[in-house]
Image 1 (tube, one colour):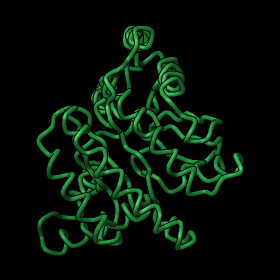
Image 2: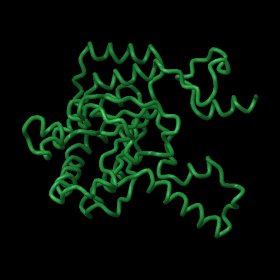
Image 3: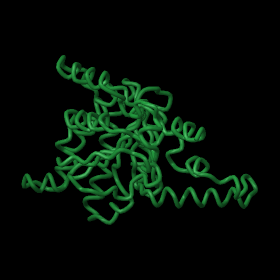
Amino acid sequence: MAFNGKQNKADKELQHQLQESGAIPEHIAIIMDGNGRWAKSKGKARVWGHRKGVRSVRDIVETCGQLGVKYLTLYAFSTENWKRPKDEVSMLMRLLVSSLRQEINSLHDNNVRLAVIGELSKLPKEAQNELLDSIDRTSKNTGLTLTLALSYSGRWDITRAMKRVAMDVRSGKISPEDVSEDTIAQYLSTSEMPDPDLLIRTSGELRISNFLLWQLAYTEIFISDCFWPEFRREKLYDAIRAFQNRERRFGMVSEQLNGTNTRSRKKDDLVNALSSY
């Protein structure tokens, strides 16, 4: 995640072309899949693949900051990942701590704000403390918001939101008639960020693996065949180009858009447009 500041002229030109050719996604979410399988394909232990995957995180965070992406959410550890061998889980927690300690200065110096979603209480205390310290240190930064989904699942997120809604209904803070899609969204762990415009999944798998189930309703999906340790900025550019070539209608038809380039339209704008029909 360290910003090396050595971006070459050709890469700057590529980024400029992307910015000129269409809208850059405001929020990109990534399922970082394939570390273990990539390592096994190289005759190495799965642990080696996870360590190499950190390099891809570093490059993608840096690239998103350069492109002007506002939010980047990385699926780092799912609720289901707790079922993996204990040695691998322990290594992943240690890798999380060491990566934060190594990278937090660079993140802070480059105006990146760190956030976390998921059941943080299930993480080891050392990991919890390192995360909370990093979040506090970068809390006033105004650039890219980097969100790590740790011990996270979409079903957990929705279930937790429903419990909180029910408690507020019971206490009289809100009435059942007031509960709407917008209400539910405010109770989700992602309430402070827009829904993802683009979801990227590496390793070629065609599923969303319990990630941001509510938030991905209208998200464009890009599947990359490469494993996560091989996913670098060139692959990200491919995903953004694909995003820019799609027409985002949110249930409408092209004629309703009156020639507007929907790739740069946001969901709330389209909801307002629908109200006139």
